[in-house]
Image 1 (tube, rainbow, N blue to C red):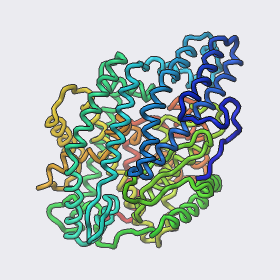
Image 2: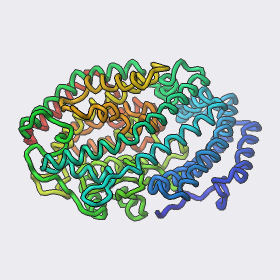
Image 3: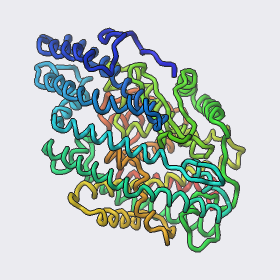
Image 4: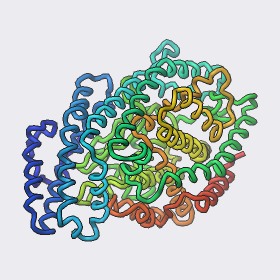
Amino acid sequence: MNIAPYQPRQFVPAAIDLTDTEQLAPLFDELKERLEKMVCVPELEVWLRDYSELSAALGESSALAYIRMTCQTDDEAREKAFLHIVEVVDPWLKPRHFELSKLLVDGPFLAELPAEYEVYRRSIQMHVRLYRPENVARETEQARLSQQYQKIIGAMTVQWEGEERTLMQMARVQEETDRARREEAWKLVAARRLEDRAKLDEIFQKLLDLRAEIAKAADFTDFREYAFAMYERFDYTPADCVRFQDSIEKYFVPLARELQRKRQARLAVEPLRPWDLAVDPDGRKPLRPFEKSDELLTKSQAIFTRLDARLGSYFELLRTRELVDLDNRKGKAPGGYQSTLQEARVPFIFMNAVGLHRDIETMVHEAGHAFHAVASRHHDLVAYRSAPIEFCEVASMSMELLTAPHWDEFYPEEDARRARREHLEGIIKFFPWMATVDAFQHWLYTHPGHTLAEREATWLALMDRFGGIEDWGGWEAARAAMWHRQLHIFEIPFYYVEYGIAQLGALQIWTQSQKDVSQALNSYLNGLRLGGSRPLPELFAASNIRFDFSETTIAPLVEAVRKELELLGDA
């Protein structure tokens, strides 16, 4: 990893150890003293740049510790360094950040800042409203429990054909045409997950109790209300999310089940089982786009360059600075993510590539986030270099759709068309899953004191409402614990509906690209350059899309996807 500060430091000493609170203390003392003695708005703007520089340096230090830990969760030194941030540095920082925010909000000059600071001002005011010193220890415990969840999931392996395999590696078998082999592999993985079911339930119960305490301490009715304030969801409400769930049930669930019935007919199986959901229904071999991650990198570079020279240059930045970790391995945390190193103002991509088509989708998705980070790196305020999640995911999901016509870099033409069909079908299937996860979290945090049995019954009822037609007979326990796979429920509560809102935005950009791809890309980048400097509806508007997740927006998008599937040869 080749990183250096985006620009020379003006306030933070070059040689400081950002994990040593004794070295950090004088910087916070100086910032506090300057705030207390401040006499004019221009002085405040200089102060904000210095504070932003410190925040960026600290954010990068924390991000690097997290990246190193997730790249190898069984490395004790990396775990220790990450836990030092979580258990020592962050708890020390939080009251000091709050103290500065409180002085800023109570001072005379915040309200006099120019209009360009509107979003920042709103955010700081919410931070002051939410902060409670007694919650710092609870938030630290949350992070520790989340790390335990990562460690348990990352350690899950099975023995398959005489070799130890990660569960991610076993996913390849689900695409094979031998049904008996798929069933054997699926059951092996499901049984392995169930071995840690009790541990994960115990961790989640502790998280649930902690979150209830956090909300109560901050004077909120429940954690749902607290979470909406914490995520600064100024532009929509829990009621809007419930209506979104209803619209998904009306428009997406029937289409998802229709696709499954077609799958069942083409496979000629009765009933359709969980191990029948990833195989090609026409009996073709699994899509295998690459063997090694170097190939994933070079062909992704070719795609982005073909799509737009600006995107090609952004991706080249990641490659030349080695800002990627792609290969799946034992001990590596699950999933994929993009993290921004805020002082260097460069992105980092983390993946678990094993040679599946979904690795391409993950790559272009996380690259969309990376492009967002590069496009908005010019903002002086660190807060403006990142956008609300609902728009961050527009950046990533749009890139999946916009790159799809260029997937022939990985495949011959017919396989590329097949990959595009499967991707669009995946979007259709995603919305019911998103609604299930979101509705489950709404229930979890508005039903205090519920039992484990009630929790599982609620999950199963939601699976019945939004799920597919596959038969889970004999594996009801695996179905009841399926939510354990969704790390957001454990680590980032209520962070999931954003994906649905953003996917609607991405579909709007995609429909524009079908008419004029250059104009769609210009609109896309217009929004990305704003970072988080404008309210959410304005970010959407800058990309020429609507911030709306009602039936008015959903119905025509579902129809557009249906028509595209027909054009691509959907039976």
